[in-house]
Length: 146
Image (cartoon, rainbow, N blue to C red; front, side, top):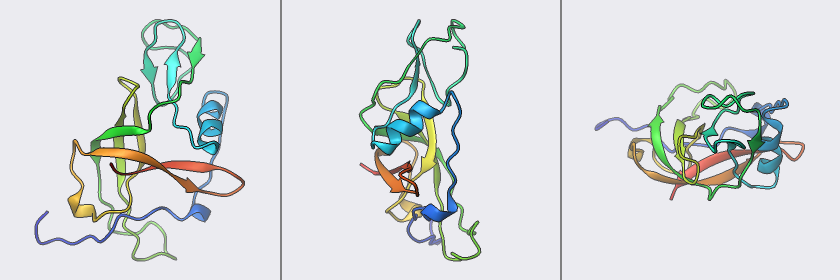
């Protein structure tokens, strides 16, 4: 990416985010309100899966656990979006990342990487969770360089 400057990866403004939950995602979002990162784990065979699903893809069990994770991980993939999706924030640089979550083998979370120049982000970089306050007590897990 030499010669290209994107600016700092920024946090999505909280008023631009809408959290919706259902039976399978409610435990994740309730833990996030308490600033705990969790992942769906099969209560029968132990396989992790994100996003959560009604049945375990390995053993078809509907038993689910939501263990608290260490809040760290590794960048698996990322993109740099230098055209703002928000007309009212024209200089917004958004960096969606896919993070392999430590403590949950096989679980990946799509999130936002913030607080550093976008051109310095690399696959394999260690990251740690932080929290973006939305509204009504909701919090969104985001990541920063560890």
